Amino acid sequence: MTTNDGDVSRLKRTPLYEQHQALGARLVEFGGWEMPVQYSGILDEHQAVRTRAGLFDVSHMGEFKVEGEDALAFLQYLVPNDVARLEIGQALYTQLCMPDGNVIDDLLVYYLAENHYMLVVNAANIDKDFTWVQEQARGFEHVSLSNQSATTSLIAIQGPKALEILQTLTDSDLASIRYYHFVPGVVDGKDCIVSRTGYTGEDGFELYGASPDAVALWQALLTAGKPHGLIPAGLGARDTLRLEAGLCLYGHELDEHTNPLEARLGWTVKLNKASDFIGRDALRQVKAQGPAKLLVGVNLLERGVPRSGYAIFSGERQIGILTSGAPGPTVQKNIGIGYVEPAEATIGNQITVDIRGRRIAAQIVALPFYDRKR
Amino acid sequence: MASLNHPANLKYSKTDEWVRVEGDEAVIGITDYAQDQLGDIVYIELPWESGQTLAGEEKFGDLESVKATSELVAPLSGSIVGANQELKEHPEYINDYPYEKGWMVRIKLTDASQLDDLLDADSYLKYLQGR
Image (cartoon, rainbow over the protein chains, first blue to last red):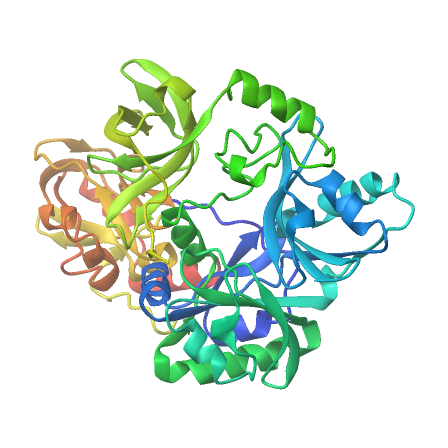
């Protein structure tokens, strides 16, 4: 058989790199980083997150501090979501858009304290995003920006047992932290932002801490979680989990040729918020005229695995393309996400997917594929 | 490498297939190293009907693991006598039993001299170490 491996020389590593090696992780290139794709196996890790808990090193992601009297005004201009509706201790999901409405990155915005916000961006886009944010801040006098990515670690514990495990290491009342809210806390004696967020479709927490504390925190979590069946989980399981949960991945469902309305993220785009924002006029037009393509879920009906880049057909006509695809271990179907012409984006539409030259029967389904019923 | 298994009585290709010669027939699969690299295998496409020809060094099937697609490359030429139909429902046999229940195709050899181009277990191990 033949496979392709990325070149792992000159890649960046998180503070937990040696931990991953010690755990026997398979390390691969991801967005310029050498990251664990799996430890015990993708299916095993996926199952663990859905039924117990999994521990993810996502320290490669980027964090920017945005501070100053003009921080809110700046962020309102920078992103389509309504930052003004955040209370301190709350986060929101949004995008960085270009004037044409297309997406530079998707990100979270955290309201840490008065005039003090944190942006959390994708690892592959840290430099691109920070350059963009700096350029856009020029019009605002009282804003200071700081790229804290290199000194911030991020560990995610996700799954139905995540709260129970994490509670043994902190005095913060975790059950009282609502979804997309966070508290400054102390976990295993280390200062962390304890955020009830995640990318798996399960309950869980993400812990933002100082890089020097990452190793001890990671080990403390694994030890505390062992009796509950916590295992380390890599990027492979992260992808199958978020795919089943219908979540977008930048570089696949989102890129600089796609706007948030096409990605069905209109709920994060506040066209009528008080402030103008970059891309608003373009997105208003998209809303008025209808998007050029629309995100859909795809189930295969015959044997095969859908993958990113495979063409989607209605009869003999190509109507779209897949942007992600994999076996769905929990839903027990082979699933994909992609874009089709809006008129074809109807649930139940019988389509085919081109897999290495053969047309495999499939159908359009609603997202998400998996919902844990919050 | 130490925990992976490569039986001494088999022959191996540089594209990570194993061959068990049985008279003028050969059974083919992928090695323990190959399945370990691939991770969980979820799907395999093989020439399921007998009688089809296999051409040495050409693709004879596809494997899907959770993360990726891989091609299967024929280590030898021959005609298909049978394919392991159980792999349709149990692709995980390839991960768990790469040399036994995970066998893929049985062929009738058309050119036994091709066996000389394959590696023995020691040479395959050395080849793996050099990768």
